[in-house]
Image (tube, rainbow over all chains, first blue to last red; front, side):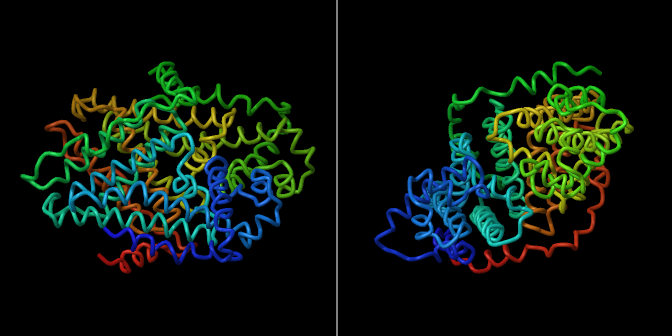
Length: 255
Length: 255
């Protein structure tokens, strides 16, 4: 699994994000603007990002922000690229240190789920953005497709490697397994972030472990559940859990 | 499975959507406004809905629209409720005609997946809205949580009925199975709508059939795959497939 090639796959779609005025001296300012914009995009969505609002937040002039990004779209693309690089750093890069095959695949899923769990409050820009741009053709949509497509390809690659390593069954369809894994991550994000269901992490963890167990080659060592998804992080205290809504709905239904 | 109780569960959250000026004579106009607003919300998102834009589209005055909805929020809630009712009509109501137990559960999943497939171009307001409102507390978020929570509760109820009927294993955790089914629907929506992957329907269908097969009680009749998800609808021709992006990413990667 090559982090470099994954990143390279992002470059064609996001390089326009760097096409603003280039200014080495301004790199620190530029990074600070992207950081601030990323926080804003997580909160409100990438599409709500405007140079004006960002300039207000940074206490800069609009032309000061424009000096670093030629347009709002360039800024959005830069934010998306920054998010993708952080994702790679937190999910893919540490997994590559694990032995090739099942341990690496398990680490990758564990890191991904843990990142999503940490992001429950802020939101995942890839998941939120996928929904935001699925009907807005243009460079942002292209970048989103390239990033999600690139990430799916890495996942398929890790599954294939585990199969070639003899850890997963020979007849495992890597694309199918990747599709199902992706679904569990989306379900976790929705269940934890919108529904505030306290069992979201456990549900996702259980399902991922079962998927891998069902895919395991006969005679391969039993999967360690600890590795598959890590310990559940504490449920964030900043918003009240919303499980009562679902419970209330179940309770009030008749036959 | 009671359609009525499902609808009742929506009422507390969406009844404010009817709190605008009540005018029996204006019901037809009101329905036309909601229809037009729903089309707009599917395209641009519920949050982008404004009375002004809607009045323009309807060739009405803004005050004309305001006469039917007290506020933008009331209009948004009315649109959401309208969508939920259509969802119930297309997914839940026909399934209730099937025998209780596995046939009903299978019909429910098949109808749901087929509805999502038909909505690939327009987008699903529940899935899009879940992402749109997951970080915007307020009546819209409450309504979204009530609708998705209510729908999850119906799904859990159908799974429980299939288990009680002896079709599914006694140890099946209905909440867990519902979580995994929800994930597959979300994966289908993202894969078909954003990535335009031509195999999305087949992937979701295969995974749903496997979930039910794995959950089947020993000795229960073999599942008919035709029932589980129906025939895949033709891939919509209005946007070009985007599978080449993922393929290109896979092809260019080294080791």
